[in-house]
Length: 122
Image (cartoon, rainbow, N blue to C red; front, top):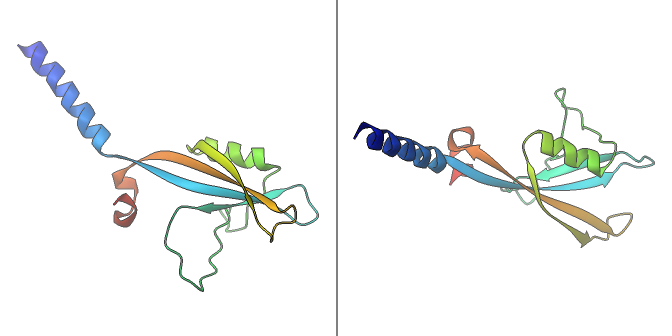
């Protein structure tokens, strides 16, 4: 009887823990720096942006400076190190790009609901 109760308790704990996890997505675009092989990355977490808001969403270091990466692969490895998992990559033709094509990378990551703001967890 005690063994069955213990197994039931473990199963219940697993369901409660699973219910508190939330999967979140982000989209990364990499832009090559002018006259350089280094890239900067822009990350879109899906938050609302105002029409005339020009918020800089490039990744920054601890001092608030835009972080440079040696290549797109370096940027992909950076996101992997901080827990994001690559889901998909696709090209988008953009006239503002020097090459005409910008690659977009979609990532996902599991978060505890407690780590997210109320608006993001909905």
